[in-house]
Image (tube, rainbow over all chains, first blue to last red):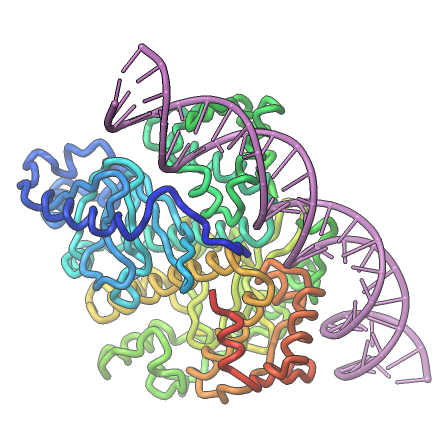
Length: 262
Length: 262
DNA sequence: CGTACACTTGAACGAAATCAAGGACCGTGG
DNA sequence: CCACGGTCCTTGATTTCGTTCAAGTGTACG
């Protein structure tokens, strides 16, 4: 479909080494003791959202370790052995898979509260590269410890299963989007969904700041960056959006929503 | 993308009533006592595959209830409250979602050993309609009982999480397929993947019998049925496949595999 | 034996990719 | 401070792949 490699913003190869340096550096910093789940601003939007105080403290202990990842650095690599899953604490990530010819394809964007690495559990290795789109921080959750705790805390088990299931639902929606919708529907849905996710995190619901490039959006939506650009321009001309670089204003959310109907 | 409704083989509306009649009818039949997991031919290809004898018997008890679904009848409906998940025991199912204009889109095909309904757990309702492509049988697994047992049997918890994770992986692959690949790659991958799944079930690896129509394949792959037909014809002309209606022979699996490379 | 449905194939059309060029923004260094 | 190079973004012209439309063939089943 792409005759030439689709060049994304940053070179994965150089990111890898960059990421490793950062990882080592950040692990030298002792985790802040104040960073407990009870004091975290995500709270209900996160995996342990439904736990009671004692259980929450226990979960907090297994998610104690934090890791800072600088913009364009790599959190984990496709093929690496999976012992941890990660919860985004702040910032944004993308996950990327690479064709055997080296063409990258973005499979997801992750915001605060999202779990990364779930897709790799079944095979014991990460299925994708995870790269930070801005300076970000994650909670490191040892999978075996999580499964242990889930055995003894039914509420956590349910919540973990729920998160896994919702990831499946999200993927199925993406599947429908990629299989059935035209370019305008895809872009409209993408913006709506991003706005909703930010809104749930407490941001304004009628404006959003994209942390990804047009190329990255295009890759995720199975389009070319030119097409994404054209669609955004068209929606702007129609008065549905206001556009100032990465700042997108939802001037008419109803019409945007309808543009994404299927 | 489709200006006209994509007509699938059978009318979902008529299937629904048909399905309900069947459901009531089949529930009148007492479950066969001989149908235990220990005696099931799927064994290692199924959820309880790694359990030891005592645990297997316990699992067998919560998956005791079977249900027969006749060709084109409906197992469950999108939006219905989800209390059970289903394991395909024999036969084939498709899951279907319908656009607000009534256009159907097939989101998955399910073979023996596959779990259906996982995508609905997060929201407590099924996300899709599940329809049998041939006369089929499923094991009914009460979700609450499954989660209960998973709490006390770590091996089952791991296996359940593994199955959920693998579903995520599978969806991500489909996402890549729909987002990046051209028609030939999609069809080639589809056939390869189906052949592999049948092979794991003990069928010949170089031949396969499609239980779905070209329309259904097309819907799943985000193509038109004409395109699917043309691609299959092209692969036949090249000597990669032999085609006799729904019987597909994999004359040159290596080349078929390469045709699906990305 | 005839009707219905699934499948195949051809021809015309269209949506999005590709190719190509120009412009805006950013950090850097003179 | 401004010039410079590098990204990123936008827009236009052309091409391409797959859809749509249309017709015809084959197969299953009453």
